[in-house]
Amino acid sequence: MIVRVGGEGRGMRGIEDEVLVRQVASGDERALSDLYDRYSGLVYGAGLRYLGDRGAAEDLVQDVFVSVWKSAAGFDPGKAGFATWIFRITRNRATDLIRRRRARVRTVGEYALKPPFEPGEEDSAGRIARSFDVTAALSRLSPVHREVLVLAYIEGLTQREISARTGTPLGTIKSRTTAALRSLRENMLFEESSDG
Amino acid sequence: MDEREHLKARDLLGLYVLGSLDPEEEWEAEEHLRRCAACQTEERDLRKTHERLSELAGVQEAPQPEIKASLMGSLPRRGTLREWRHAPIFAAAAALIALALVAVFSSSGLLGRDAMASATLEPTEYAPQGGGELRVQEEDPNARATLEVWNLPECKKNEYYELWFGKESGRVSAGTFKVDEGGRETLQMNVPEEAGNYGQVGITLEEFPEEPRMYSAKPVLTGELEGT
Image: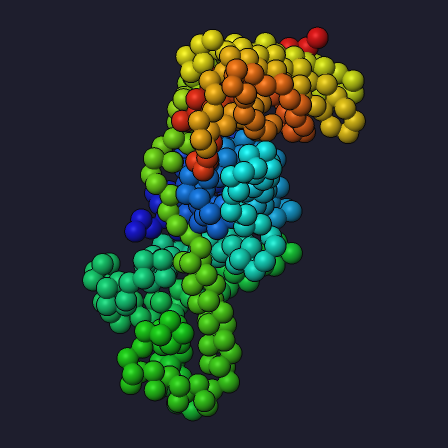
């Protein structure tokens, strides 16, 4: 599995999302690339759940990041964090795609399509929204803390496997995992308070 | 309570909520938790964080690497219009791409009150004998499009035609239809509200249950919307 949560390259050095968006607004494609590394997995995963189709989810990823590119100048960090902003874009774009699909269902008639998942109508939507916040909080962690959590949760490695993968003593990995969870918790509290 | 034991147990709480402790360590952690209110609070907080991470792991999934390459190669230029033919994501919509990019609607308010627009639809290689006319008329509260097409190939099973409004950054569907045995059809469709920002129209041949894709589109007719 490709680990993308938390970012790669410059993103691994912990540049905040909001700083990256400002860079995107000034035309920095590398900043968009970093944001893509952080959030594309989540946008794609949300697309799969909203739309139930890999091709449509890929279209959603394209739509969302083109929107980020075009609308970055209008992003106001005083109103909401980047995670909240991109989640709203994702949800709205998915809703557009669903409406178009429903229009086709009405017109094509005899070939009934499976009803799509409706963004925002049940608890999966809450789960997806929270996951955007967690991704934002992960991006604020130090690289070693982010790494240990991504390897444990996203890649599903055991503590011993993380130790072997990173060349770090097992005891260090164990204490680092607790410290990383604690740090993430603090960052999540920050995210919740800043989005008010 | 022994401070050293407290610190040791506190360090293990992350692995405790993760379920990664050895049985002996787990027993020690639980023994300590029974006697330490501070660690009970810490454990609740860490468990909530653990649950959020588990949710994230269940939701997120990496898209194929080509998606990023396609995105980065097709970003609209800042301050200029990028022609569709330069953008790989839109490359397959060849006939639509070939048309000049004139934002007719947005510049002249063609979908404003009582405004009209029309397009002559020209054939592509997919329907060389085909043709069509499209007229857009505002009908409060929505705009309506009247579409007439002729000499289009009859749809096979699961095939249908779809009318699109297009512009530099994408397209929006206005509905689907089929043609009669003579390849003709005349129908009215609601125009999506956002179609006011689009300058081109195209009709593609689609096949259910595949989702329409820009990169695999088969445009049979294309045209440029103009004011009348």
